Length: 252
Image 1 (tube, helix red, strand yellow):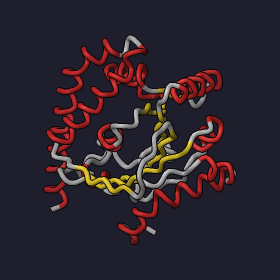
Image 2 (spheres, helix red, strand yellow):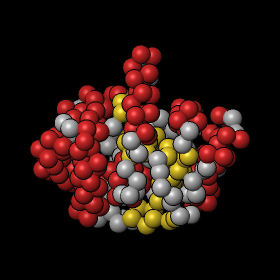
Image 3 (tube, helix red, strand yellow):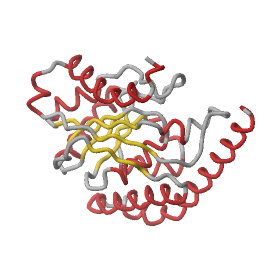
Image 4 (cartoon, helix red, strand yellow):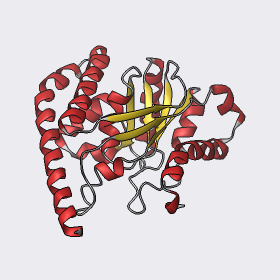
């Protein structure tokens, strides 16, 4: 049974890869053109929302969005757990009214097509190069000043084991929120690990289904100022992990 399910998961991952590649190629000329001019950046964001919807529809991934509080206008630092590559592609259609850029590992620039999308719209973070890290901070500041929110996965990677149990948070997102003086929007992806696991995990689960996402109450500037980095990091971790702990108590 394990290998039957695993084989079906592999087939589903291949299907997802084909759908993703088709839309990547179809949208490439439009996005490449739009991303050449910074004035057209917010128009390009609308194309990513469309891409996200295409993935949701063609890959049979409806989303159940649970709002814990009304979402105020941004910008803010959006912090989320990270259990699947679906987290990235679904985020655009989950928060379409809050234009954002991702801050992510510079390693993604090694992929030719993704390099164009990521470098021109989002902000690569070079963790081992202080000069380039400073440039990333400068780009983040410009983005916020232009009304863009920032998306960061504080775990830094997708957990290898016991998903969706979260890894300890790195403090970069919270340092940035304090330095840029912006509020924080916590997000929880509850079950994306079951819908599309890491492709490198050959026998890992992958199937169509409803993606459940929690949009939590914004942590205000006043609340952020009252907490030091450790307190703020722990507070966000507790908020984001709560739905996971309730759904998967056996992991804790």
